[in-house]
Image (tube, rainbow, N blue to C red):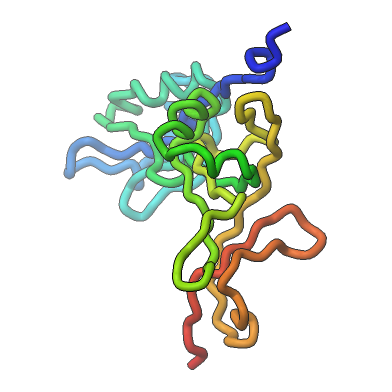
Length: 201
């Protein structure tokens, strides 16, 4: 039995959050009746969730599957208004935390090449001070091309859990004392990275 191949599962990802806006400056989706907008989307791509409508006239929608996502991205008009559809710039990716000592033996290029089929698009290794230099730790911040991170990834023959990533900026000096290294929140699987200290006004 080929253990390595049996453990690798490719992620079925699709663009979940899509931004719609009028293609012409003279047109806008912000003036369209919510009933008309909802019916137009239902007629074009069945039912999809409208998350919000921006003052600029754009509309953020959420697709529920790959077929619906493809139809939304191919939309060129909505209720007689010429539109453009594009993936939302930030909502379609997420970060997780992976702790794997063996990954420190790999180059960034090798990691991305091997983990790409699992949805990994970027990795960042947390380093720690070691005298005057920095040494690698077993902790990696991993970016995935999906709105939610997987529960685990497969690194060669190893099945590695993925923890939630929480990005915090702390303003209380007492909280960032001795915060040169990443911290794990007590009682949760969330990973907290202290990145900056802003002075309290």
